[in-house]
Length: 71
Length: 153
Image 1 (cartoon, rainbow over the protein chains, first blue to last red):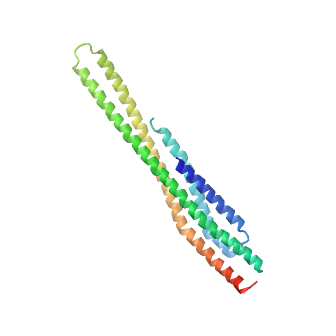
Image 2: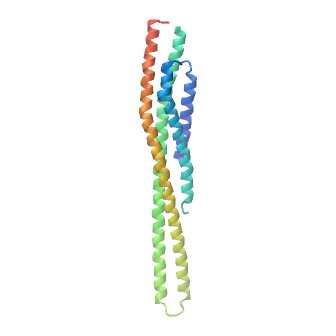
Image 3: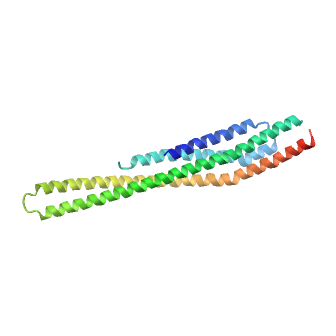
């Protein structure tokens, strides 16, 4: 399950960096920026967060399924 | 807006362009890693089910052979009776193990289907939004660069 754990770590870092860059680029704050946020970055971030939650849930469920296997 | 403010904005726009590109790369790496793990785990679950099926078949054959031997026995049959009892227990254990593996693979299939669906959604969203964001940023960066080039403040 190390691949899923790696994926969770990568997606966490990717989302963190995207959020950090969005905050750090606050010098760009006009209507085009608001449109960029509304039309692309907000949904991209929300979808990335949903993916992260799906990865976490899958890692948990996969561990449970592996625990069900006969030894 | 003076040139310094425009330059600060250009820098912020470049930061966003880099961030969006970097996010796309990291997302792809995460999805590749998740898919590889699902494939690996899927193969392991299938192997476990195939192994337990073979184990169950072998236990079934041993129990049938033990029963046949006992059926042919005419005297001093107690050892064969014990052998059959042991074979029956072994077959029941093999059946329980196989059922556990079947339930595990069924749960894995559900987990895998749900995660693959989430991955496909994330890919489709990224394929749509990342190029759109980059185009939007690029277009805006060009407008700002033109401002700086013409010295408009």
